[in-house]
Amino acid sequence: MWHWIRMALYVIAGGCSIWYGGFVRSVGAGNTFYRIWYVLGAVLFGMAAAVYLRLWGRVPKGLRITFVTLVVFGLAVYITLIARIASEFQTKTAETEYLIVLGAQMRENGPSVVLQYRLETATEYLAEHPQVKCIVSGGKGSNETVSEAEGMRDYLVAHGIDASRIILEDKSTDTSENLRYCLSLLPSADTPVGIVTNNFHMYRALGIAEACGYKNVSGVPARSTAEYLPHNMTREVVGVLKDVLVGNMKLR
Image (cartoon, rainbow, N blue to C red; front, top):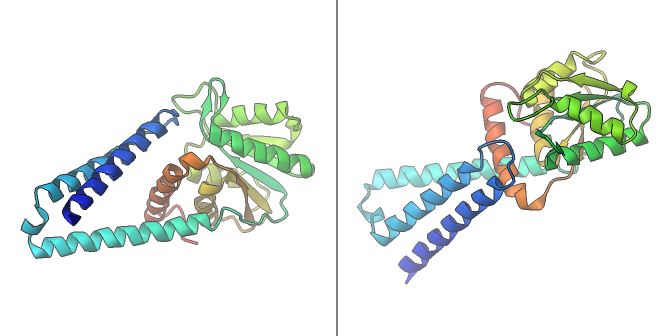
């Protein structure tokens, strides 16, 4: 009986993973990371087939131990990083002189959902702190009609923020470049800075900022959409691992 239950669980999990990948893809988020859910679904279907054909018992014991060890290690890393990422969801914002708004996809009809949330948060913060200057950071992607910085500037101005308070950084292509280029626009590395990005992205953004040389930085977290949070958190785990390996950030 357990044999059939395991097979059914793998099939159900695989089907859910592939469905979720299609669900994320339907948003048109501007990247191909949704494919990881298709890959996971294929792996789970493969495991269901292995259970059905009773192949596990034919694998040499050493390979089975190695496989299980790698899976357990991978899950431990994933869960640890998920916990660290979640720890910055409600980060406390210190007093700032500059606000850096990190870019995300700008569509023909306006900002994407994640960027909309960042801009709403930035607008509210800037309205409450009229002495704070704002750097909008993001270049123009191949699927964008204007640079992210331009689109963000236009949004902020349209929502009552004086254009004289806004500085454009429109050359960067990723978070590391966002923060490195923005650092050169500040009076000094000790300048109090608040970084606006979505809650799921805050841990990595702060880690990269510290690695870039920011000495007085805090987060201003924007909200995110619950149904896409598993996707965004998983993508952040991969992003953290990549940035740590290439030296772009420090684990916090």
